[in-house]
Amino acid sequence: MATDQPDQLLADLAALRADTRSARHAYWLPVGVFGLLITAAAPLYVTPSQTCLGAGCGGGVVVGGRTRTLLAGLGGGATGLYWAFTIVVGVVVTAAWYAWYGRVSGVRTQVRLPVLSWTLGLLAVVVGVAALSLVGLALVLVAYGRSFLPLLVIGVGLVVLGRMERSRLLVVVAVGLCAWAVLCALYNVENLAYRVVAMMGAPDGSMPPWATTVSVVVPGVALLITAAVAFVVDLRRR
Image (tube, rainbow, N blue to C red; front, side, top):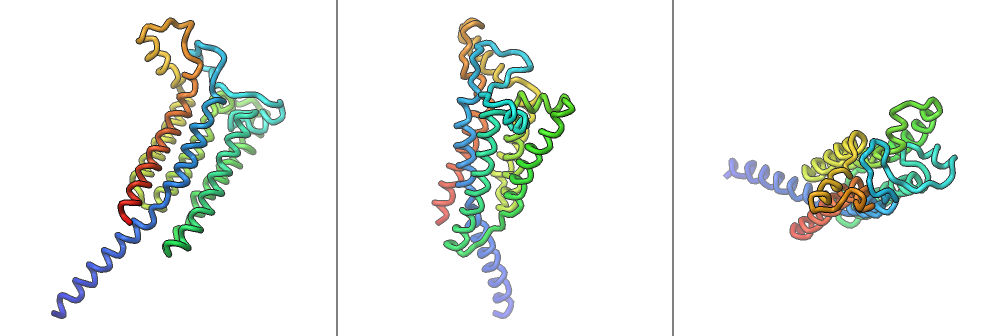
């Protein structure tokens, strides 16, 4: 009987640990917000040109030379402002959501690291790239035209959040987002959409302008699906 008590205690502790880890998986809201905002950036990436096979096609609306230079690492102009807004909203939503969720559920998750990652990433991109653009480095020109750094900043923060939540799903998706950001920096992913449309018989001159939005629509939809899956799992565990 005495032997059974320690075993039962260990079993109860293991069950409590499992329940606590399940209760901590509240990342679906910030991930969903990021997914929605990334997908909503698609109009900024629509290009008037219907054939975009060169290395310089990146899309984005321009507003003001000074704003474009300051936010060059975020895409410049209206695109840069939108990405700055997206990251700031993600930081605020994540901090507020987990603070509220901790009070309601009784299980507090420290999200300082992912919030710090997004904040420092935003500052590094804005300040660092703006400074480097003065000397005209090639890496800055790539970031300026391709607008991949915001996705990379968001992806790194989500990796940290996934580690804090001990969620393999979120870590895998976030790493995939980082890899996608790097791919968008090195390759015109919209070319894949052009090839698919061309296989359907469309001539090069009639390629859809929305094909250039693939770089943000794909990761945005992926995050929305991840958030939906996490939300359903969270409901089933309650």
